[in-house]
Image (cartoon, rainbow, N blue to C red; front, side, top):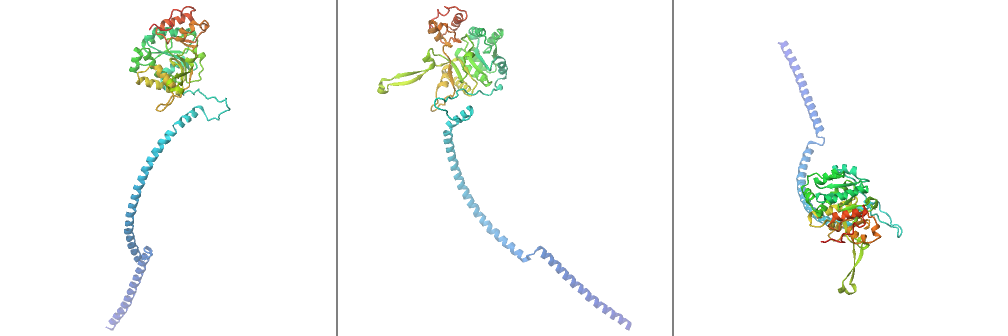
Length: 434
């Protein structure tokens, strides 16, 4: 029994120590866990847990306050935007007005700047009496795309990028034969007939005459070309000439009622955009004069001075491939397409009329040909054939433009100047019978 109790005593004793040991372990574990949790909170919330909540609360309050301030700010910005839009619209109106004023103010300046670009850098004026302006505009860059077919023909026919060109349909067949026969006699090789119908093309081909015929794709063109009279065909030439100039060729445009006695290319100056024969018959009418208009009712100012010149003949002129020349052709062709007008009148109006309100004049240079060398039929029949000295003169060409009996007078001119028949011109009247 005693042994048992001892054993029990020993057991009791050991059990107490174990309990104390277990209790100590729990306390140690609790302390460890506490320290661990503390470390975790210290790591994630270095400023303290309650401070975070305070900041969150403060942040929520600031959000509400900021939201109110933002709404007010948006309203202010909207108001400022509306005000700015109104100011912007007003500024745009002002800009449009100023832009228009600037455009008008620089209109003349632009022309001057274009001239500088064409003629070169600005220059100082030289001493008195030494200044001379240039009237020879530069030629355009050739553009073969304007008419590739025609370009190939012109490469073979033209000499120094120049040639004589005439337009003809079957209505002027007989005059055309006289025209190219005398061109051949003079020895001119750079000429071309713009055949307006098949009959003329066939005639040229049979007589070894250089010709070009437009493809039959333009019905309005073909209608005038095939059946049109002298004036109608003349109107076509301004459209046709444009292609020659675009290709970079200078053209001596010729009607068919012209007899060639010398090579005209030997007598050209080539210093102007247009070099034309005149319908004038003396120095005054050909080159210009001061015509005084008398109006007695004006008293002291009864005499008004006017400048007069007889028109250029649109049936014979030399035109260089320049921008003013092409503009001239465009202007004339456009007016003839919309007006019932004579091509020669329109040609001269566009060439001579100055700029004025509502109209901008053409800035083309021009030269009048010597009216004795490039002679019209009025000069020949009224003056030259009656003067013993002038009869000895050999003109370059004679244009039978003043008389309707063209073919007979052309043959008379050939007989007199080419065949030597001294009385070949005597039977013709100065003017016409009708």
